[in-house]
Amino acid sequence: QVQLVESGGGLVQAGGSLRLSCAASGSIFNINAMSWYRQAPEKQRELVATITSAGSTNYADSVKGRFTISRDNAKSPVYLQMNSLKPEDTAVYYCNARAGFLHNSYWGQGTQVTVSS
Image (cartoon, rainbow, N blue to C red):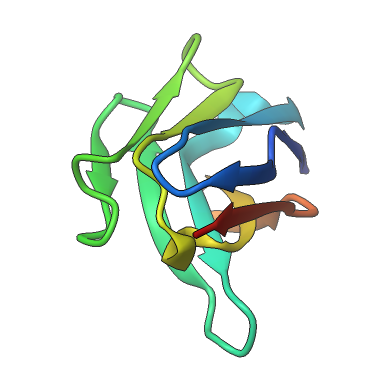
């Protein structure tokens, strides 16, 4: 089992920055990859960025060049640095971990990010 706790959301003006954090606990040695997803009202949850246990990263096209996913050590915590924020970035941001041989999926409770125009 992996437990995830996000922090760092809030209200920011367009063009501003926020940094989200995701702290993992439990069986973190089994984590294969950690990701950030987001879900805007009445929209499907979408993948924003992923970092693997090897350090490889990938991003949604909509955030490339503006968002950076990183971590302090091999597993936790994981950060999402969000720069040049746009109103369309407004959403609840969720931390996700995939762990174990079966890549079981674990979710945090989410943190609200609101970007005002």
